[in-house]
Length: 88
Image (tube, rainbow, N blue to C red; front, top):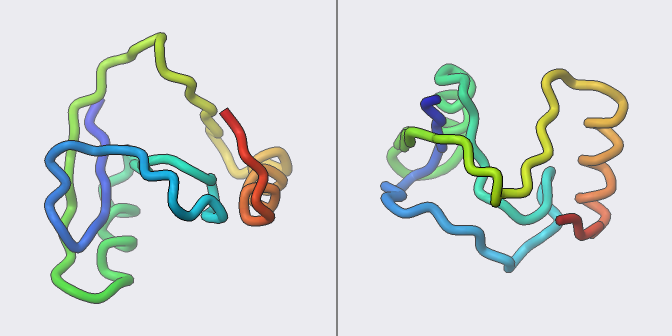
């Protein structure tokens, strides 16, 4: 699976930084499998927009919470993260 990460810099080796955890999904490295969505995000900030892309292979050692659609559970999760909730 190909995943995209919007940025204003090349991110060759993604890493999770635990500095500000009140973002929509708390700590993490945000990617999407939707190229058009990545382009929209890349064009939101300052600097030259860059779309980084990665080949993802399933790894059962990772803890992944996946929302297939925008449900009430998804919205509640975002609200809790913005309030500072820490999750695994």
